[in-house]
Amino acid sequence: MAAQLDNPKEYQNIFHWAETQKDGTVPSFAVRKNDPYEYQAGFNNYFESEAVPGTIPQGQNSPRCVRFGLYAEQMTASAFVAPRNVNKKAWIYRVRPAVAHEGFTDLPNNKDTEANFMPINPHVHISPTQVAWLPFDIPDDGEVDFIAGLKTIAGSGEPTLREGIATHIYAANASMKQKAFVNSDGDYLIVPQQGSLDIQTEFGPLYVQPGEIVVIQRGQRFRVELPDGPSRGYILEIWGANFELPELGPLGANGLANARDFLHPKAKYEIKKERWEIVYKLGGKLFKSTQGHSPFDVVAWHGNYVPYKYDLTKFVNVGSISVDHIDPSIFCVLTAKSRDPTAPLADFLLFSPRWDVASHTYRPPYYHRNAASELMGLIYGNYGGRSDEFQPGGMSFECGMVPHGVAYEEFKDAYEAAPPEVQISKNSIAFMFESSRPFTITDYAWNSDKKHEHEPKMWDNLVDNFSTHAKEIEEALSHAAGGSNTSKGRGFESGCAQ
Image (cartoon, rainbow, N blue to C red; front, top):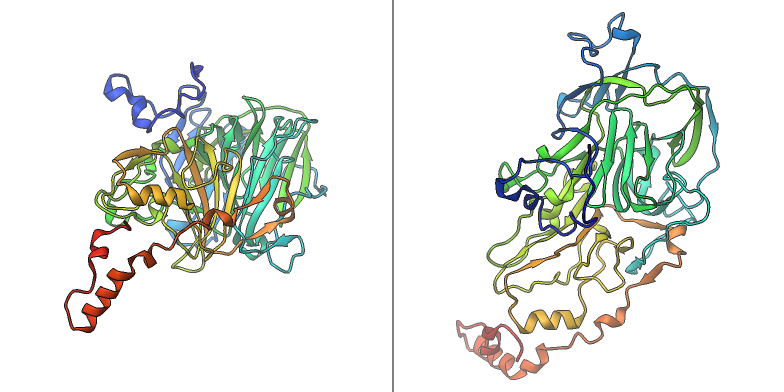
């Protein structure tokens, strides 16, 4: 039985999951105390689970008679001839196969969602302007469930092309009732920011809290309940790929998100003869089918195409322990390949509590331009390098090759005094949806009253320190012209402006 937390922010106040283990003085545990479910651990493994022992047929997948009169059904998520290491499938043994429904009908489109991010679409906008959004409101009028609460922010591509990305927020105040959802376009990576999600899937239940993420893959049915009341969060949707763990390279065997910390559900079925609505998203459009029984009647399953969750407090940060910063790829939790072998379709990056110890190094995010589109959100706490208006439930966006960095005051503080070795991002988790593709922004986000632009005046007082060294520069140039081996003057040796 799950325990209640004495402090609702208990897991926000830890530096890392290791703190919960009490240095070995208590039995180790893999899930939060208030999580009601049991899970299977691993990433990209082959799993199996039975709610009734002895259900799964051995030595074959589809016998003439499955035990207990169940139906065998396969979900195949890759080409049949895909190489073994990327072949994705699951066999599920259920009371009624998914085909037992009453046909499809159109549903009205959600006017606040978008699937076509081509610039030719008049409902999306492209701009180099750095924009941000204050926290999006959670509706308080009427019942708004997870599906109705979806709002699209930005993306690239289009789902029928089988390569692209969309980013959304969800804001819901009601559980889904007798309703399941299927994303036939791609995979959802869901990041709760406020309120837990109790997610019922065909493979079993997943309980996901702020500070955790969950991935529901293409074609998998799920239903979202709100055990804590109204909920808000972020979604990264990818088309034509699945999420993977990034390669570790010189890091070796361990670090970043370790495979053993990803958790998959155990089978749990329900037999209910009542009216259900299954909502399908296909090409960004919504359809529904109805049926007279629960879609969550899977008694057993086996396969490697299974939803999963991950606790972000378990991320093992790496970084420089001498000088300078390593590129933000060290913060990558999950990645998804694109057709360009040198650039990912999407990365999910995490900025969580960690030590910053680099010596003789400018510590804030350095001024930079890079090829990636960056959409950043905050789950809880505060995050340095953004304005005070960067709040939990809000977002900020920078498109590729647009320069960005901190205001002069923060630069000056870091420039004039060597900072101590310090823990940063304490009690805070921020993240980034990053992509090699340029984003366009939806009408919903572009016209939102939550939108504001980064104020360019924040950089007006970035002073010209170089010109104050005119005499030293002249000496350096004179020495160089005279054939001196010294290519720098005394002012440059000091490292900082006086």
